[in-house]
Image (cartoon, rainbow, N blue to C red; front, side, top):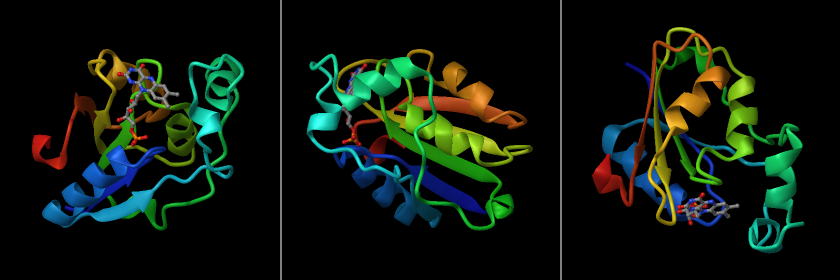
Length: 145
Ligand SMILES: Cc1cc2nc3c(=O)[nH]c(=O)nc-3n(C[C@H](O)[C@H](O)[C@H](O)COP(=O)(O)O)c2cc1C
């Protein structure tokens, strides 16, 4: 089985989990990097006009700068991200739209500031059409995976 750990992380928490987990299971590691990286001001969600809030409510894609080579080779994709507004950040959905998920097993994992995993998996499903299965767990560290 070929495994990929693909992650987005704005502040480093999910990145740390993803790296440790990928190393442990011997998976390839891929970082979802937005074309325009997030600054500290961009993710200050208490500010109504911060980039994160504008993106959240605009419905537009958040372009991704990086691309997975030979995505077809992977059977299982572990998809890591922080919970933003109770679900995956928009850039993760934009990433997902770029690939054919047919026949893949998708295991999402998320870090958060306190929220539960909620309906994260259900909200992800439309973007990974054709996947064999989709589930999601909340983690504090790689030990939770
Ligand atoms: C724009 C934005 C929205 C967030 N929304 C939530 C949320 O709805 N619930 C929550 O518990 N934490 C929320 N957080 C906190 C992050 O989920 C948490 O700090 C996460 O571990 C950050 O991961 P990272 O370091 O990989 O970016 C939010 C953070 C940002 C920047």
